[in-house]
Length: 264
Image (cartoon, rainbow, N blue to C red):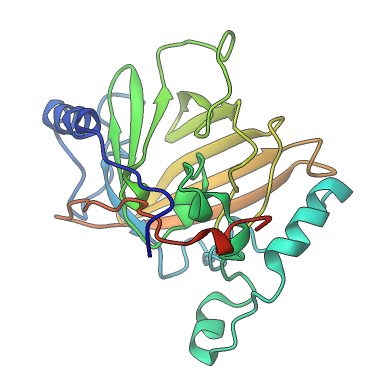
């Protein structure tokens, strides 16, 4: 079958990642006590994978950012019901692993069908590792999934004057042992997670990255979107340290025919 869409990795991405990796020292790749790169800055620089065990009594709910359904507006609920239709796993082993939180329907998934970028939060729920690199001006999150790169600017800039993108615009700051990222201007074609929680372009995401122990990273989310949800809601996802692990190439090379596309 002839591919409908094909994404080619850009050499600039690889050059950027290589340069960043070379400029960062003291990577926390061994299970040692998390120490700040400098006074008052938590050390999050490492490669991380989806947590398979509970952290602080919390286990990841399958492919979802939350284990409690947020209250949706009619606009979001209509979309979400279609995305979730028929997704409860029939295989007992998979049902035990992900419960009711299996992935949303692929034929309604813009990132699967059209090879669109996955958005700022969804890639945390992928079965692929990620790498965090901290610099003075920005925190970079390199995802193996789709070979995506996310930037959280730490130089004091604001969202003013920025435009809407698939990854949104993220600015951050440190508070004690926590990195706080504030993200807006996210294209509404993306999902918040792989379960299929939708959002509008009014979404405002606050993430708190903290390292409760040497081997774990917990990300707490607060989602506010008046078009999609009746009130702000929260979620949590945890990942575990992957020492001596490199990210591999993973790209969207879509070979689905037009018969699988939304509206076809």
